[in-house]
Image (cartoon, rainbow, N blue to C red):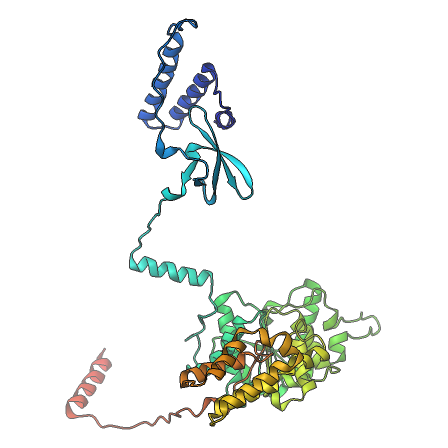
Length: 501
């Protein structure tokens, strides 16, 4: 069959001899019989062969004799195309082009079509006119349509949908999902959560863990925190609210994990989800120990090749690593450099010095915060952006003028001239401020857009206690209510029947 296909795919305009056509028809007939084709098709092949033989046995007319001209063959208009007409290949509807030439031939014409910068040749049966494109309707029942949409969302998780809602034993507090949204929308899974005290940074980190698990497989998680939090089992208990079981690593267990990693190249399975305190990171753990007598030198954490690769690293109270010369900083940086996702939890950035914030962001995103100079360059417009946000929140009579002045000052910095002026949000907010008559809804949206202009908005989430207000605190009380006579009788009867059973 491949020979027949190749034979006819390279047919010229003069066609084939009758013997070749008969041979191919016979091959088609035999193939149709083998595959159990429809009897009608087999009969048509036999009739075509018989007609071909009959035409060969008829006497040939005298070349010198005049023969009446046959009426012109009527073409099938639906299957023919004109030069300049837009057509597409039936086998690939996205391959569209214009007919540039018609090659007459039998049993069907061929057409040269200009597609994707080249001229390709097709038979008429291989093409279809653009205006004849069939629109196939696939109408699904409502339940199947919903199932289809659900399957698409599971296969291609969107950035506007959270899969961690109601996935843990925590109350739904909207602002605690802000870090999750910021995390999944960032260009790299790295985030510094710098919320105020009491806002719930631990819960926010757990929600990020849950969201990542809903989107992909998360097997290994490392939590680094101060020793008092390990002693109090704070993280271990908080993670139980998310149905997660973590183990605490002491010095001996962490050394065991490093040795196993050195031997097998894999972090031990029983410690895939672990909590380790900063205090364990010392010189011998990082760089190994010198040989003692017959004992060989023990490799340190920084000697591991391949290094441990955790799916998520959570660093609580990350301001403990603000000094780059400490062992804690070097150990955390080692884990972060080889982790898939990283979350830092720390105090509000305004409580940290400029250099401390640089160290944290450089450890978190060394690809973005390259050095102190680039950090200072990026941070220069941020004070003016914060002033603009404060003016918008204040709603004083001159708040629009104050916000405009602050934004102009931010745009006058080198970073503002190169980046901020080209930000569509900047132009829209500035135009709305100049227009005046800003409604309450527009002002709220304007605050959100202006906060997004912060140069570190993609890697820092900051929620202050004063921004979220006060929530109603529920105080449950047990109220004892005596039974009515009918209720008491029912209660007693149930107890009696149960005792008899």
